[in-house]
Length: 321
Image (cartoon, rainbow, N blue to C red; front, top):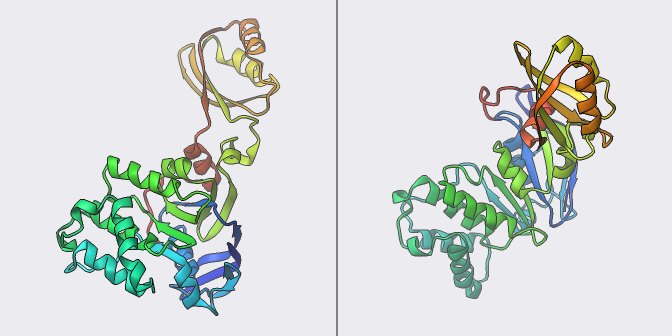
């Protein structure tokens, strides 16, 4: 459905995108993940023909974006982070107007408008003036216009921005319902949204793709080295100088973090391959003069993987590209 080849975008002398290449199959839901300023919005604007690339090629449904932009726009639904809405129109008037702009045949306009009003839970508010709506309602109007013409490709930039928890769940269900029927590209910095909705993730930093993988592979741990993505948390009593080499020498276990207070230690372990054995772990701890107080398993989180791949511990301090 999408093929990007060495896409580069300069703003003056600043490279917002640097030789980005990837492919997206029809029916996939792809998450663009990156902190503010990573280049996600710039890439989406290139895909929607809103911005031309400085170099490289983008093909959508086999068509060159730079040569057949009008035809491509008919196949694409786009929700920018701040939807451009006409505040003096009612929701229904705006969607009727959008239907005409999207070349929906006259006889089909009314059923299309009614469908998205219901799908986006806007039916009861359909005759309200847009200027009087909350940010959450405006966001839903933006989603409604994006899916109005039943596009083959749906590109959503921060689709749940400004929504309350109930609305967020509804939008997530709506997006997930499109799986295998439409290709969806979802840009967000909310990792839980990517994990719940996307099949595959592109992690972007400073205009470059650092990772392109399925959620399943990413959750095996950074580099995909963990067989099942297990993280084991221990509380152990004993002398750290004796315990550390004993635990670290067990095949299949990688020491991650220690937090010690006197002779009680909290230890995070990564299971780097399936030979990690709790019986062997307990024996090694005992031989080193230690005692296990607690042992529990957890999954490696997408947040941990993202932070390790991107090399960022603070996602809040940057500006948007």
